Length: 216
Image 1 (cartoon, rainbow, N blue to C red):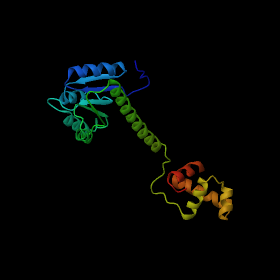
Image 2 (spheres, one colour):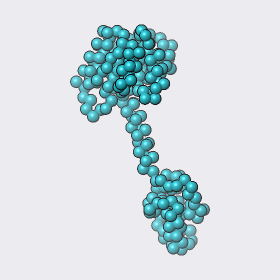
Image 3 (cartoon, rainbow, N blue to C red):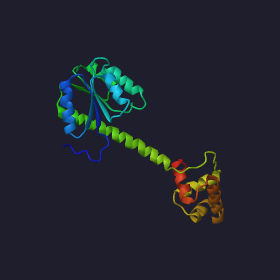
């Protein structure tokens, strides 16, 4: 059996009105280590989605009651579900059919008949891409959370701006004083004023703020 240890994305919703295909695909994907819930049409699938959210949806296009197109449009309009990767399965393999499927909101379009190995590879590829996107967004959120927080109304004088840029370059107060041709005490005074304005605690935080704010 496929080793899915350490993976969270392993729940699939399989929708098709062909019981033989359902049985074949469900058995194969479960053998690969996925949890598979099935539905016979889009309407039944929506009822399932009201109570559980899978990591991916595999959906036939032509089905009674609610076809794949109508179903995927419903999914894409629901903020709770719109992020889920969707794979269309269809006997229609013409270029215009693929284009319609992808434009409707599917991420992958597979033509029947297909090899189970290819289906499983497409599933894993879609889940991996979804994981990368979520990790990327989580990383951005984490970076935002760890940014230096300074009141938005803080304004620096032209001299303070020069000083903080040099602080961000790693220069000491003595080196900055020499560079600006002023006393070290003057530089210390500027640094102290900026710490008071920004509510930051030290020169390191001033340097980080300067770099994060594109001042340096």
